[in-house]
Length: 293
Image 1 (tube, helix red, strand yellow):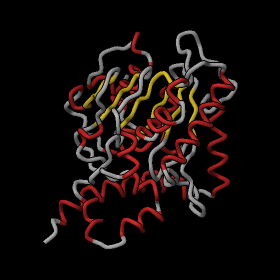
Image 2 (cartoon, rainbow, N blue to C red):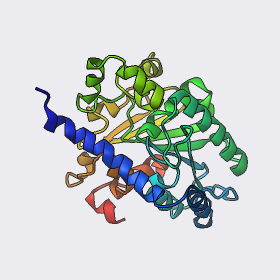
Image 3 (cartoon, rainbow, N blue to C red):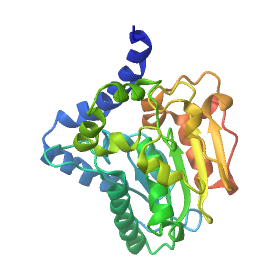
Image 4 (tube, rainbow, N blue to C red):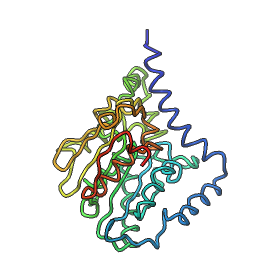
């Protein structure tokens, strides 16, 4: 007998991630969504006239997760960074034909090519030599393909991953069920290639992690939560290598109960650690009180 109660927990977390990102977007038309994205410029987010300051000389590129988009994924973190005088930009990637508003679904290697183009655009607009990348879930892992295979290491100073699936996910064992249904893997790959790429042991992840998790010249930060029910086991998010800092959010604040979606959407303790990673020379201790800072 299958342990249904055990399996329903990661499924519900995955659905929560989708609902949190899809519902606000589908309440509007596609044109509405475009207007909302353009409207972020007036708040300094995706403002291509922004010039990085001496204190924060690198633009920050935000990379959303699966089932998300460049607006809804960053309604918390983007203003948080803008208010701290960063030039902040966010892209949409991994679009599938006929699927509006929610992205991060296409082949991850192709999504990394979209990131490459976007970073080049941001660097050209700001005049900066390098950018910093901050991503949630797939958005914290996908940039590693850009860094390793597409020349991104020369253009990126730091990568901060919030609940990134750096070594894939088992969804608490749910991913193993695919092997029990003939053809299920092929259907998954055809319908939503990014989901297939993110299963632990996939060909994409095997190639990505071969020869080491990191590349020289880039600083890496991973921010994870022990209550993550989408990227499991949660310690698989951590990276090995030089210039790596792995952070378990509960080591900083035991009261933080954030799971996979909320740690990226509105966890200000995680946001404080993002700010520390972007500007380590001015880092301040992160505690439970950072939630109100």
